[in-house]
Length: 144
Image 1 (cartoon, one colour):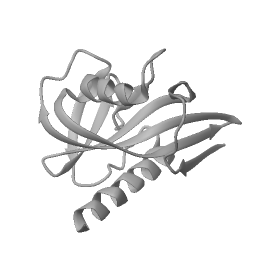
Image 2: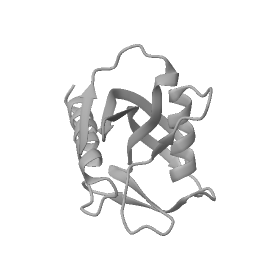
Image 3: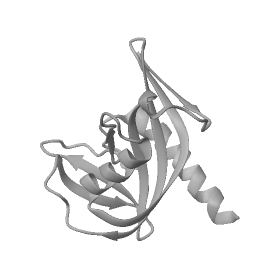
Image 4: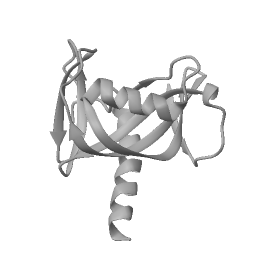
């Protein structure tokens, strides 16, 4: 069984984070990526490397998976994913991409811009919850 909880941002050692997840927008559309050999879409992101700051992980993964050259990352919350009693913490970021470059030679085969969350997701339960949180952040920041 998979359980996902979203926690308020709080000071935490980077070593506690397994990954960074980025909900990004480019030209007023949501950015999703498709890994090589996959038919499903997912949010950009990935695993923190040993000794790496989680904010650096987010920047590196965003570039590696989308080719983003110029962007603004804003931390939103901490995600706690419990799979079979093993808990993994991630940091969720909202991102506005200003400039995309060539897609680096990586595990990503394609990026696509969507008006809303796609139906064919790699991790539907997790990505729907993370996307909803980032979408709420985006729309609340547009009002103010």
